[in-house]
Length: 408
Ligand code: HAM
Image 1 (cartoon, rainbow, N blue to C red):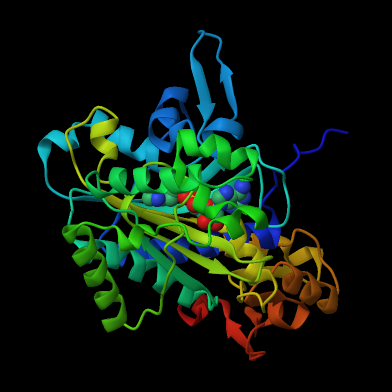
Image 2 (spheres, helix red, strand yellow):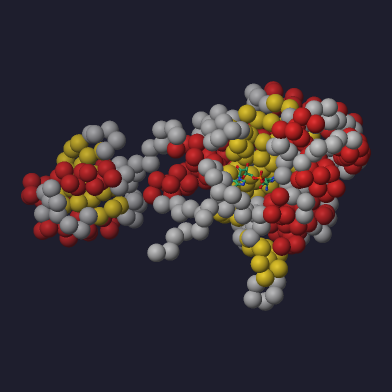
């Protein structure tokens, strides 16, 4: 017996429906913000993620599914979606063309992490990326879009925001922070390493002792230059004006190296302690860093399995739809089969090839989540009619077969 790999899951039945429901809801909202579908490969050259997500990040340092393919290329399964979309944007020469491009995507991401609730090795993200727009109104727009999506799912979250500064104030802040960190004894091994590779990551270390030592650490929000500081103020103003509540978390640094200015996360208590259900931010240097013409970018990604975990604890959405059509006697199976063939041009139809008792058929229709039950028995056959039952409203009637399409 061969099972799925650890940390990888099948999406069947209600899980599959829930997954589709989440993606379709996200797409609907993203389209209202004029974002367009895109899809990029699930495997890329390893160098793409090393250069963008960053060699010092846990994702690149510890979690990549990396291997040499048969042609001797160093490749890996994508651990996140942004780098691939940026590569595609540059490869299509959209950076040279200028203008604004806005994309949404969904699909598998791979991280070799220790699996637990809401944390998988193959998981799915829905994400959006906007290129060519430097206005802070777009930072606000992507946050409003995400907040709108989470509201549609009725999920309670806390929005945390921060500004990481730009290429002017971020390095100065780093120097200040390193000086502070070097004056502290007893930071954990990971933090010792991070001081050298990416000091701001020390700020979100989960070790209690480190957090105690960091109590008086300088904060990035106190060290922003004038542009970053006024844009951060503007972002807070727009969010407040549009009714989106937030907390400023000056220690929110995110686990990926490409961010500057805005960084944010929506966290929820509903899947273990304060898990991020979605996160993102601005990445104005990434396009240039990957070889393109300097183009600002901003976006986010949501963990679909995390949303699924939360929704499963609530009442599931009603997935009933389509028609279940059946017969009470095998003599009528040909008839219902023919009717189904016609109906399938417009409707989702499940046909039962075997006669059964009304109750058995009704149970099956219910199990299959059908909304409409159609059945032919002796009485109906005699009158060229069909028995109709709406399994949501329980309304029942007989319909003349010649009128069926119109009645449905
Ligand atoms: P991220 O924070 O690494 O950001 O991932 C986004 C979301 O993916 C997380 O908030 C979480 O819900 C989900 N996620 C991450 N790892 C796992 C896992 N092992 N199992 C289940 N869910 C997981 C990014 O990936 C950036 N590319 C987001 C972005 C887009 N920034 C700008 N544009």
